[in-house]
Image (cartoon, rainbow, N blue to C red):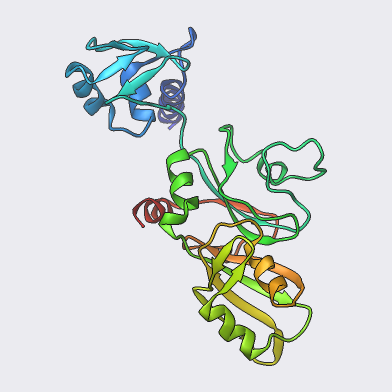
Length: 259
């Protein structure tokens, strides 16, 4: 039993070593490509042999070639990033600024996820300081662009608490659409959350304009006392306490990439 345990430890150490750059800071080209998410190492050997990979502008067909993380490695002309892709969901609390680095901000969302991983992740889109709820972080630039670009129309659902009861005629107005200073906007869906409390409104919208939900209600004469994003691109904060984060499941990642 002791011998078996010792072998397991050795194998585990070998696996960890295989996933790290060598002592000289170099990594095998096929592993670099595999880490970038293009294909498996075996498939990487094939595209290298076929002359589809360049290193710093030079076509390379030599198997076993090593590169550094600073080298410009490209497949079909697209530069590869060997960093592991990370996808993290935060239930943002109030009082935190959604920014990577702001010397004037006392508290930023980056402080809440700073120990989550070694990779450099960043928030997808923005929530203003007093808005709470679903905020996604990743280092997958292609997915981040897809989720924030208006043409992809990713659904966002907010729970809004107003300073006074929401009038039925204003609900109808938002269903039809209103004209703000920066253009026309309409709710994709809107309704009352609690029939006993006229101040609680649920609104679905896909616009990514700055502070759009607050501006919509301000335009109609309401002050937003609380604003909570409960859904973003199919992701919810269910079972995730305020201020805590979790990593996405592979199923959730696949859904984001496919939808």
